[in-house]
Image (cartoon, rainbow, N blue to C red; front, side):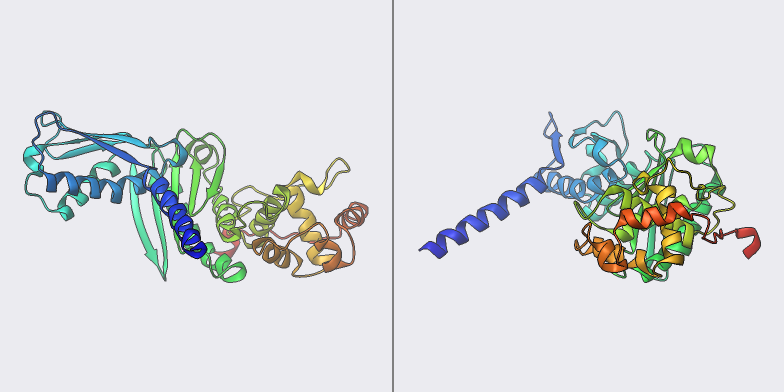
Length: 327
């Protein structure tokens, strides 16, 4: 009896979780004239569940979750859609198959973007979405090319279980530089306009996808420091990107993150233990990293290592990738 009760509790919890996921996006069909039959409503709902979450992935947390689907023959000849709102023509949709409805809805949703493409190469896939009508086509091409050039290398070097299906989104409403979440990388349209040659922002952000540490794996400064160290080590064109590691000064700390931490890591690799950063990356992914990792791997604490670095910070040879030289 106890086993049955426990099984019932487990199943109930699973059903609640499933229901929560299904409620993440909700569609309400508005059809005052009852012009849609049961099968058409079912097909519309199914197509919505197939296409809208995919469309919403470009907006992330900002996408409207509650959507109205309204019969509006005077507003569209087929289907038109935007975030939170879908309009359909009941005359067009009558008798249409699920496949045709699904295709039409996807097309209507993608019209909200200035550019949309899907490219595949040697097992890797990239969906590129731009909400910026003024995005330079050359910048767009360089971002795409950099993904296919560097991402497979990072996957092979650090984590061969990384996803091979990635989404790039250029957003005019995003005001930072770029950020990675899951398999999506969000780029600031404003940043790309101001820094059109910075293609290795792709190297930094795709490394975050490769890292895939999850929550509470380690301090943020370490995660970002590794990503910038990888940008330094594997970058496609750091010279062209006008990017470099800053000179050391006594006000710095290894906890400053990004480039300051990355330069420290380059020094550690050359003077303390080659392969140290890759090992730390593995520990973080396995949630095995602790503050004692430094001592167990090098024989010294992170503070002791930083002190040694601060005494001789120039004992490191820095060489930056340069696409012109490669060419």
